[in-house]
Image (cartoon, rainbow, N blue to C red):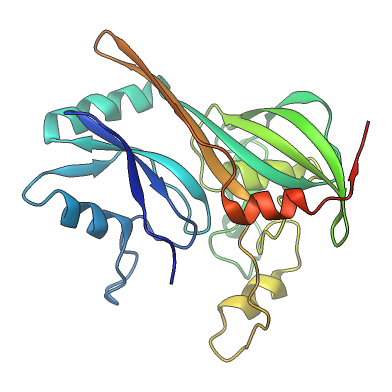
Length: 242
């Protein structure tokens, strides 16, 4: 049983919600899966709620929800103007530079060359602009994964799988990512109902850690640290690299 979501900031115009890993934010197929938006509508019945930000199923952390159609429109325009600052924490393989800007265009790989994974994104010159700023906070040695780093990433654009695809491109893929930094068979076998994965594969190590924005005349900033599963991986490291 996945942990339950929680509302970490309740405002008359919006909510900031902590989504656990494993939750879909909204239905992707008519199979009756209970999603985050279903949970929110149970908590706030008879109220119009709109997801301002979205997270992949395996990504945990903070997302923004507008209350009411007018606020949904306001936040949508703020999103387009890039006035909502989002920060993520990720565990990645290797030791990236201390900081940097990944400025590489992204598009769905299958539009440009054969790909067995429909949603896989890739750096493709001349396609959709995408920028991710990052800082490497610390590098350690893990008994299973070897050298890994804790990074803070701030996407300046909102492309699908942006952080994951960008870090694969620079050679430091996100830990336990089934699509990026792996052979296609890893993801294909994972989603194949005939394939038994024992032990169950861990989710990718990406967490939405901070949201900041100005609404009206007031500045808001909400931040949460690594969730238990990622903190356990990081805490298991047996060496701090100087």
